[in-house]
Amino acid sequence: MTPSPATSSSAPAQPRPEVSSAPTGPALDDRPPGEPAGHSPDGSASSATTASPSADGPHRPRRPHRPRGSGLPHLMLVPWALVVLVPLVWILASSLKTNEEIYNDPFGLPGELRLGVYVDAWQQANIGAFFTNTVIVVSGGVVLTMLLSVMTAYVMARYPFPGSRVLYWLYLAGMTFPVFLAIVPLVRIVQGLGLFATNLGLVLVYAAFSLPFSIFFLTGFFRTLPKELAEAAFLDGAGHFGVFFRIMLPLARPGLISIGVFNVLGQWNQFLLPQVLNPQQDEERSNFVLSQGLAALALGENYETSPTSMAQLFAGLIISMLPVLIVYVLFQRQVQEGLSAGALK
Image 1 (cartoon, rainbow, N blue to C red):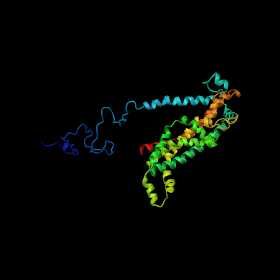
Image 2: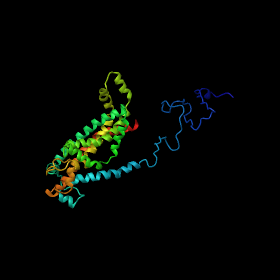
Image 3: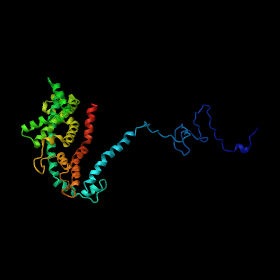
């Protein structure tokens, strides 16, 4: 049959897209006829194969699975924080009250901000003298403890000699010896040395009772340090003192800070030793340390000498806690690094 003129004069027909008989999988090609593969309807390039969206919507990354009860330790920190913070807040509020407010409303807020109570506690309650004595004794005790324990621990860890193990175990035995069992001979020794009721006597006794744990801690820490650095320093001509002060001490800095903080906390809060070795020498108790002075105030001897004498006791507690808190806040990261380094190595 001959085609009509209208059909022959029309534009040439577009080629029909070929349909492949191969299966295309779950994704269907919904491109309009004649559109080349690899282009989206707006003209932008796209992937030749596209995954069909799921029935639930676009794919989202799954969150990591958290085991049941993983938040329980954090939840337990809440009551622990309350147990620690509530007494501190109560002491701080009581230090700003008068005696009448403390007796009538012990858990209420102060009527006004009485910062002068801290000045009265420092001067009238003699907290300033107690604080000064404590700083002198603790500073001397910590310095002497660190000096002796560092040198002893380094020798124990790096230069074994006949009997070194026996000496090391004797130091460890000092950690298990109760302090109160040594009170009577200790008093006799301090009196015989002429150091009874003196700051120097307390410094020596504090250092003696702090040495066992310090040597135990630092000996283990020095054993974890690499020996190759010391051997290289010896090959370069360094002596034993040069290796100790230039190589080993800088490497042992985390351990030194950790044991230093522990000694500060322990010696600052010491009560039994100063109570026995540092009795009252005058009416103002000018030779007392903070633990002794606060205990004397707590016995009620001078509570009613002024309208704020009770508040002065609480102010003294705040003053005694501040240095310890500051030391820990400044060095808490170094303490954690020292403990973790000793545990991991």
